[in-house]
Length: 384
Image 1 (cartoon, rainbow, N blue to C red):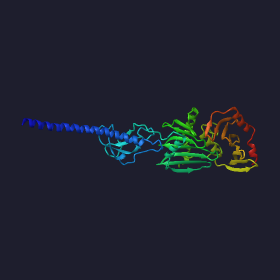
Image 2 (tube, rainbow, N blue to C red):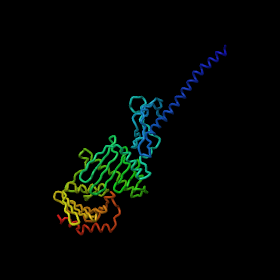
Image 3 (cartoon, rainbow, N blue to C red):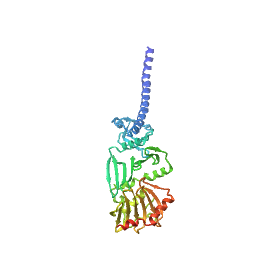
């Protein structure tokens, strides 16, 4: 009888302590399992399919509504993920999730993925990189504006710009920019098929010269740095705020350190030339083998050119309001030389490569300066 009572008390004790221990262990297991689920969701949403270049995300409803427990949730409460991927640490990359512990709809925490995202761009080859960039802009809504000779285009997905382009019909050159989360990831010169790829911090990480991937030189890094912010003038062309639009030039040209051409970069140089001729009235005449053209603004010639279709060559001149030549372009190879007030070469650019050329040979200087000193452009003016 005593043995039966002892056995009964033992079973009660086991039921009280043994079962509670099992329940506690089970809760700990759920905490770990749920924590792993949070990171799994973040990682899966961030992973990209490198073969296609498209982002792969969880589409099931359970991804956003499933119960999860954050690692730093000391109260061990079930939580819900709010929304999709989010930039928790402000690095410009949406690879985290916001979570709500008390089900009030307000985010209580934000957890970054511990797994690094794969690159948006497949850099295996030039074509695979372009295919990846094509996936970035798939389905975007395009808008175009064409003030004078330059066409500006932007394409948006979900209200964000994913691509911006400019193309100058006279120069036969332009630039393309691709974006992810409002960050430049690639820039291309379509006419030369040079492709620059950038990392998350805006530094050049790869370059293609069609069709090969090439080693990056210091000149490439500097070139890429200058190109990086070139999209600003494209975006401002679509800005409804008049103060943000490109300003029209007047007859009195804007000066840059006593110069009317800003030689800081190819982009600033191009904008300066466009400002000189914007709104001018063109007049054309044709000779036996040569076509001539001048463009006047308020009675003053601001641009003059001659072109031989058979030779595929010619010269174009830009003038300040005092009649001095400020720039010459060789139409065949795209080289443009700018001049100071004394008629000396101050900088060189190439419109086909869309870049500033730092090295100018003595022969190039002499040839360009000779065109001014000899007054070669006067032959064009005399025909009008």
